[in-house]
Length: 205
Image (cartoon, rainbow, N blue to C red):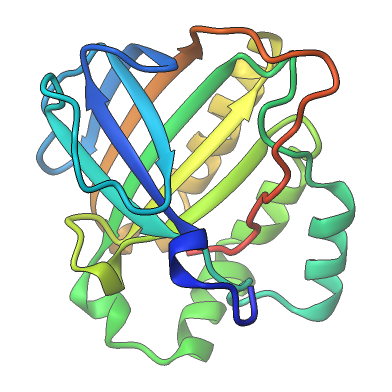
């Protein structure tokens, strides 16, 4: 992201009664759940005023690609789709925090667990280009979750997405997850043909 201003990398996920993305399922995988909501809106930049029906707001900023090699980054950029594709009307919002033990490691120790032993990056790349993804970091903002990951995919790719998530949850890396919430959603309004927001961030946790 270079010198991109922080406000241009900030995203607000607002859960409430209304929103572009309608909630169809909520799962507390590890730890406390979020309050139930009917929908989620994603608001970029600063958001000083929340809707009166909002039950929660989670914030995160996009960042540079962490833990990836040059070759991995090249493959990610070449194969990753944009968000807001017309046919990708299903989504998953997965919020994760990791343990103090994880954050007490050095970056190379985390890379060893994340990729050399858990194959996080390689597993994710095997599901491209069907699944679009953008990662947001909340830890430095003092948010309740370290990472907010947003995924979009076509309804027919939902089973493949579930397989991806199941594979990651069975890895060694997930032993260091201290809280995880998984919300599944569908888009309420169509995206015009030819639309696409770009800005997909490939960083990994």
